[in-house]
Image (tube, rainbow, N blue to C red; front, top):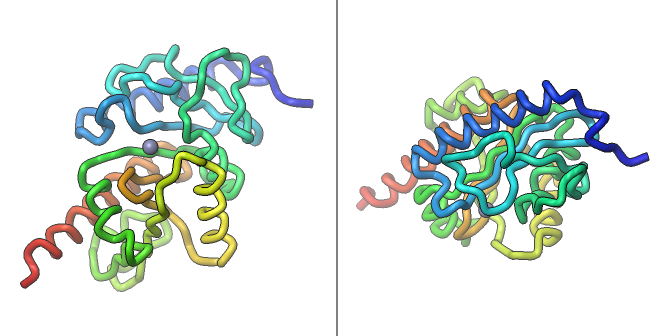
Length: 214
Ligand SMILES: [Zn+2]
């Protein structure tokens, strides 16, 4: 039987919606969500997630700007349209049972880095102390590869690329989409925000190195 909103504790939904709105407001203030772009979600349980409604200003979200979807990305208990990229969020929840929050932003740094590293198909991070901000990384000497997937408006194509990377056994903590932005996730909103801020910083450092290297 498919799940309905009545399966969800309203207090839990309100708490998750507030966490999404709080994160979105702060990320918008950083300038990482221009022109209503970007989307954010949190898991509610094994079958449902709360996600931003398409087209809303991410700096001014309230509880009414968050809706519920099932793990196939279909709206539950709402006539609103979820973000066009909802399938990428629910894919993360399906593939990573420990993931409880997904953040997707379109900062200038993320966008430029995705174009610059698209030909290599990944950003290879090594030697940066801040790699330790990614859960599971304990030393700057480790290698952190962030794949860059080609952009498409056809979400199943993107989902297939993400699946292929995971199925190949390579670790995945985040990915860039060429000319578009970044996806990252974590066990809760705080960990996911830490991942996003660290990756934004690391991508900025890589861009500076390219700019300054003779
Ligand atoms: Zn996007």
